[in-house]
Image (spheres, rainbow, N blue to C red):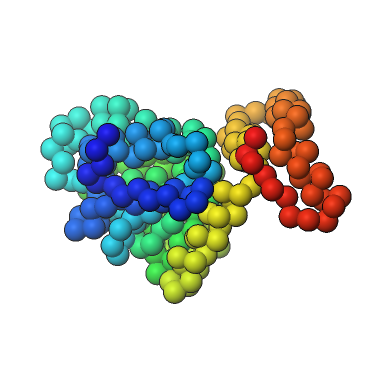
Length: 256
């Protein structure tokens, strides 16, 4: 697919995917959703971590309200375009870091929050802006946010549609980390490099276990842990990790 609305750059095993409509605060139109879905489901074998970010002064302002194709039928747009894009993130074969470099509003906030790890600049903010135009939060927001920060804070954020600062989001457990703007690029790259050199198959199993935990009772979760741990224990990364521990050296994980 020819990429028109996103930029893709690979550095070693880290793939940087940048939403690239800075004049529109990286608002999501149909083309961008298609390109993000395609890119995240067609990773090259050498990619072991993805960084999703935005070009310019914002991460993503949400749905492009000038995109007539979406305004005609919001239900269809969410089912046929947003859900595949979100599933491309949650089902990605490697960890996905959302590097929130500015305002993340509406669906733009929620595509960040479905990523495995969210790192934001101190100047960034998250806005459930939907009620400002008479809509409800979508793109997974009503599922992820209450589970991350509790019903009381989730309801306040959604009803009042007021910005949640990056520091507040980190304190509440909505995101992993808020960092000084001047340190942001270095911190994101260091974290991405760390994940890209880690046990990729184990990361994949962690994501599966955490996702399943919301619907499992303890018995079924323990069974799932045993199953996934059994597979991890047969991996070359486990052998390498134990060997490195015994030899007091840094492990050289291959992701297998």
